Image (cartoon, rainbow, N blue to C red; front, side, top):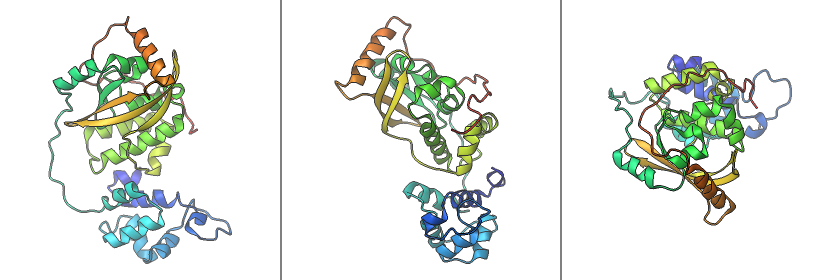
Length: 295
């Protein structure tokens, strides 16, 4: 994280991605002892058609404004996908950003009304995965979806999340990569600084994933979770933008086994106090990492 803290985000990203590409993937014979993981700097430079000295300057932050053509060549060598390539192109020392005044994340009253009417798990999350509001079905699905929780913090620090997600390792990798994508050039945003700092101190899994510099979107998709009462649920996920926040809904295929289980969960939760919760965020203060090693 040292290069990121010093403002050399381009160099940090190039080095992290270079270390993830094997010589075989790049078509380079891997004979002999290699002291570095992935590709050497001079190999990246050769494959990208630039001088080793120039590539070294890029990694060390001495040249922060390479041409789009150079970045496109590096993206090809580092085998970046479209999301990663777009992220790389956005890291150059380009346009100065005008100071922005951050508005507090707010859930419109109409969205609270909508949550109360939905019969499927639904909640509102902010840019840093803070749960801002939720309906009773979301809380019945997982108590970590109550307002005041942070989905990434829960995923990394709450032992119950490991049992809840069918593929916890993939879920953590996806969430951390999505956080880096969301942050973009808002590296001085207080909420992001707070969350990244907390997780860097308390979770080895987060430190390992953050150092990879993976970026990807975390929008729609299908996931399987394990509920302690009704068992496995295969649910689709959609994220719908509402003003500055996202409405997240989970729903099963109609008539499926998961549909029946979700109906059962709704019936079981009817006896409990209901109602959408307020805006806000509470810090539960947990710092112990229940998973000190990377799975």
